[in-house]
Image 1 (cartoon, rainbow, N blue to C red):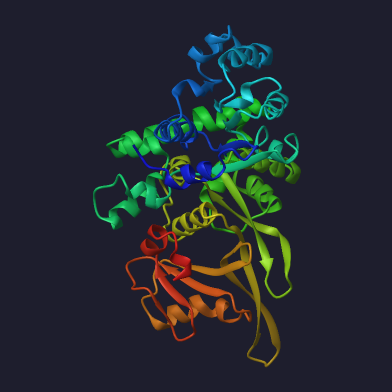
Image 2 (image 1 turned 90 degrees about the vertical axis):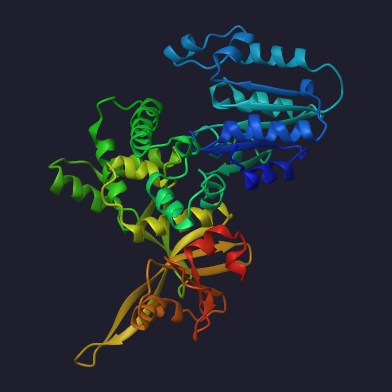
Length: 431
């Protein structure tokens, strides 16, 4: 069993809070396993009787058969599960006034699921937990349809710390494996590179891409979104915008695709939890810069499979891993921009924008973070810290390096910490 202690604790903290606990996240990241195995085991060990835990998966033929529904028929006809049949089934399970735990998997397949779940909140002895795979159906509905009665837990693939609990070799080998094949739980169970590659490539094409096209009624042979995914996969950690992407289609693919279409497709990909979009933040001006933006993949293995495991740039991959770790720890993450005024050879003053890889915010806490694969010389360290030194406030400044550089503060008060200490210690930013 791969432990998902962070997410288990998130569920435990929310028990009996009179809200619908909604676990969102990309397909195959472990949502069902978290709910139906890990959390179920916690409830049993806590003394809850098994007949007071109702598990129901709306993509399970066996479970649907219990309420007289046919999975194949529903799937082929693109229908929803009849809510009346489901409600009747649940009502028969409620035998007394003791607390029942309702664990519902892939709930977006239930017709009118928002109304059904909101109705169940009126029952004081029901504690409700649900999973879903698409932000359009769940994440946004938490805010709108549930009107403050939904409590979202967004789940990512395995963190590096979770990945290492089942990895028996050196952590340097583990990071290389993680950087190459990502953190989808099933991938860690496969024994050869060929198996991992085949699984990831098939998953991307047959599940994620097919799911997007089906959900948004795109043609199966729609090549534009395929090409857009290829371009985004090749440019993680690089600035881009819809206009630039449109020009790339024209110059490299000799295809005309509008900016609006690209923006729409990017939203589709974001809603499937495949990528995250990161905006620029002007630190001195305290305002957002809408364009250009960066995109990071929720799982590097899927990204690498998309480009056939070419372009495995360690520097950009490390950036992606740091971003995902910050997101896991609950931070809102932006790219920081500060201005530097320099004089050219003629003595004329010019303005130059310097980038901070990540501005991580959570409540009153803020951290400025640079990702540096290597700092072999003092000159390189000075280059990496140049933008950090230009920030005038007192929030903590950090450089995360590859390798095994010992943790220390340099002469400018900047924390230097290696990638392993950062990823494996959940309190590493507070050292």
